[in-house]
Length: 369
Image (cartoon, helix red, strand yellow):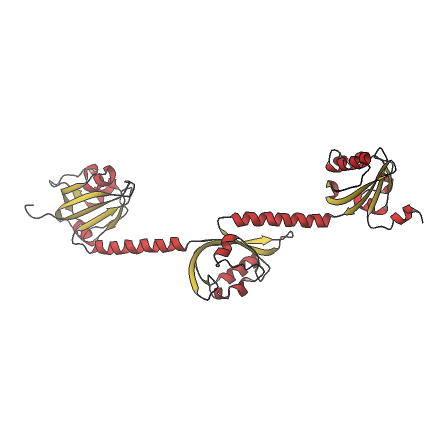
């Protein structure tokens, strides 16, 4: 049997090049790997057939074999076919013999794994909790560092969320995941309460989370997973509840005072009027700007003249930062009666000394006072 006949039956592509890098032989497998018929290959210059290899590492390796007369092994990428070949080149007479093997699938798998590892590194560095779930049963494929921290360091990769966190049943989260997977529509939740076994010790913990469930699609456009991105906002929710509770308590106290109390925000809009102030004015309008104080609350000077807006005690406090004490003015109520009052106003400052509000207290003026 001739050597050429034997080479036709091997699973690798075999190409022979002469000293000028012209093809002198190519077996059937080489035709398939290179995408050219043997008649197109034999007699042609290698660099003319594949000009994109000129100047590439593959050219340097082949010339090194030809000049150094030593075997070399290297990889070649063929863009037209988007394929990778592993090549073993050995000296043969005055030329070079190449034995080629298709390693496209292996190379792509490695590239995909490299990409996967790179993605995992990026996800692990993200300042939010991220997890990837695959399939209709939402099997956890990836969890980043913050995602594991929310579970006391536990790693749920490989488990389904229903089996790993059965305590979530009845809280609506599984149903949301199912809906995102089945419809391909993302879901976004804000300050969602979740009760779960945070440390895996059977003790239930309630947290609040902002989160997004984003569907993941395969190359055919079909949903094959769900990406979860979440941030725990339990501390923020608790702090807001504390502030709201304190504000409610303070408002309740102010409402019970015998003196009238009016409070504004930093722009001077009225945000609070207690019952006494409302009774004195006969009105308790909110969201009133400084320019509207006199008209909205029917305010006049002690002598009964129109009160200049800029000189009203509350306006002076919020607009100019003044503290006003013992001011007197007249209120003409909607029922036509008039009340002479005396009051004080002052700005409210934050820790940096910035005006954030103003407060006015008032009471009926004593006869002759």
